[in-house]
View 1 (tube, rainbow, N blue to C red):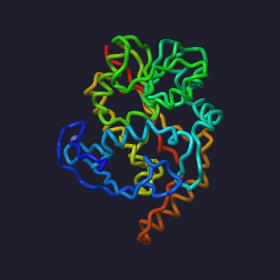
View 2: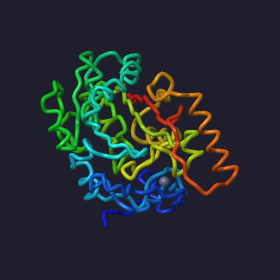
View 3: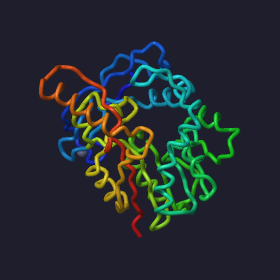
Length: 301
Ligand SMILES: [Zn+2]
């Protein structure tokens, strides 16, 4: 219950390899919608190479997850620590500084839509240089932003109240890989942009060194990450949905997570233990260069 089988979102093939399984968190302290004991297969499409979860959470489970306020104030992270995303606002806003600086170099003003804006951390980090608005599906999250000077519309993308060609910039930070249908989402994002308009995506890179070394221990896997893109599969999506890829950045150096020497040493040690010595164990990957992609694409004219 709570799961559905799907065909490949990109090529509609029903033929997949299972790469490995990820596991729900059984921790009693997790919110009920986030707690479980299921193993979820991460599969790769034999036709086009897209990586996704299958079977995956169905719509009822996704709704339970994103409409539960506990998800944003009381979860347990991969290291077993209690976390409240809402209470981490100053740090979370600061964490977007690199993204905002990067965006400014691409486009320094304009009408901007942040799809899946969550608690508005990116909107807040943007400051006043953009005419920015957020779209968010989670009702409790929208309620939590009520007293902030942010403009947010409550709607589940790809549904929205905006006109075609209304925006100069559309951003999605850690959203595309959470959506059940990324193909329709990118089509809808393209429609919202003016010709030549800019799409900015932040998402997990399944082609990263850490993803390859750690497999099921890659720290950015999760039951609500329905898709795992690579630069190759993402480029194919752009070709089909009216976008031209401009560039991909890999934020790590200069971020609060960057400990390059320590992380390189850990990856080498773990690679030796898991792959060379063949110890049958899963280790948790550290943050590392290449784990995250910051992607820019423009709407074709
Ligand atoms: Zn496919």
